Amino acid sequence: MQAVCYKCGNEKQDPLKMCGACHALPESDEDRIVSICLSDQCLKQKHLLVATQYIKTKKKLPGIHPNVAKKARQIHAKLPRRPINASQSIELSASFFQEDLFADDSEPERVTVHVIGKPKGVKPNQFVEIQKMRTCHSLTWTVGEEVSQSDHDIYADTTGQLYLWYRWINDQWKAKFIPKQEFYRLRDVENSTL
Image (cartoon, rainbow, N blue to C red):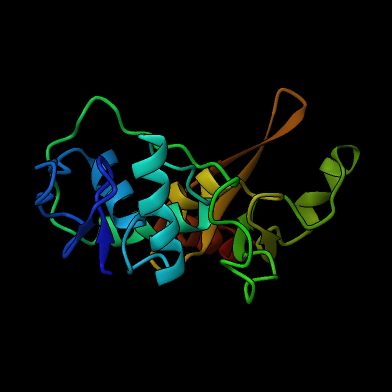
C-alpha cells in the first residue's frame, strides 16, 4: 500500500492524485499535507492499514502525530507551490500513531541556537557588565521546550539552526529571531568594537 485517501480511506497509488474510489483530489495545502501523512513516505505499512480501517469505519480522519505532520510538511515544502486555501491547519493530535511509531526516536530534537546581545547566563541586574563581555555565543536547545516547534519550523535556516538577537528594552530582555546574515552582521560589529 502506497497511500490512503484522506476522504474515504481507500488505497491510492499516489497521495496527491485523485482517489479512484471517491474522486477526492487534495488541492489545498492542508489536504495535501494530510494526504502525504497518510502515505508510505511518512507511515509504515501497519499504520497505513490502521488508517484505512479508521477512516472507513469512523468516516473521519485520525489524529496525526506531530512527527508525522512535521515530516509531511517538509516533503510538501519541496513540492511546487499550490494556490493558498483559507484553511491551512491540520490537527496534530498525539493520540493516533503514537505507540511504537518512533520507538528509535527516544531523544528529543535538539537545535543549535546562535545568540547575540545577551551573554550566556547573564541576569538583568548584570546588564551594565555586558559592555565588557562578548555577547555572541551558541547554545543547544531542546525543540518544544527552550524553543517551540512552531518557532523552529518558521525561523530555522536550511541547516535547522536558529539566530536570536537579545536587546535590553524597558528594563527587560527582549528576543527576536533574525536571519543568519543579520546575525553575522551584528557579530562583526561587536567583534570590531572589542
